[in-house]
Image 1: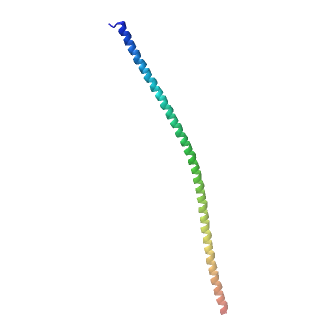
Image 2: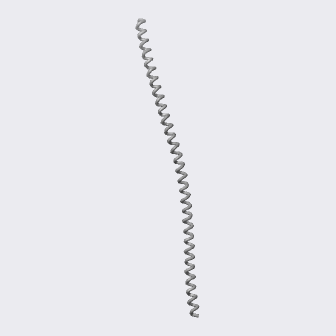
Image 3: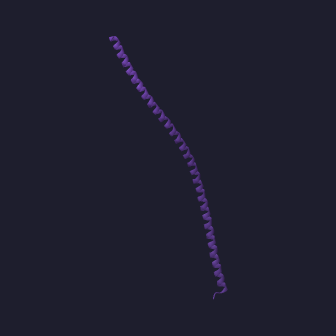
Length: 112
């Protein structure tokens, strides 16, 4: 059988172990809280960076749309110029044909 003194020592040892475990758990909880706060800060910083990147990307998309519209307008002008050049070439050919006819008529008139 244990004496009262032995039981009291055993109880003191168990209490000391329990207090040690409580201290360890409190330190672990504190470390976890610090870690959670740090992770939250990093997450917030990344979210801010993503928001800035999103805004910049939106601006870039708008610039690209504007550039595309300008290129389409330029392409339309090029097509219109091609048509005008074709029409001018036709007129030049008709003019050349008309000049040939005038020369032939002049020659015919001389013969008459």
